[in-house]
Image (tube, rainbow, N blue to C red; front, side, top):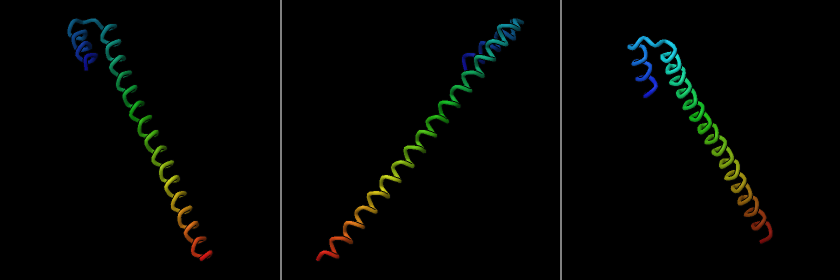
Length: 73
C-alpha cells in the first residue's frame, strides 16, 4: 500500500518516471503475494493428497492383516 501512496504523491507532484516506478513496484508486490499464496495452496494440496494415500494404505494393511488372523484361527 505504501507504493500506491507514493505513486499518488508522485502523480500529484508531476513526476511521471517516479509514478511509473511506484506503480510497477506495487504491481510486483501484488504478483509476488499472489504467487506465494498459490505456492502454499499447492503445497497444502500435495500434502493433503499424500496424507490420504498414507491413511488408505494403513487401512488396507489393517483389514488384510485382520483377514489373515481370522483364517488362521
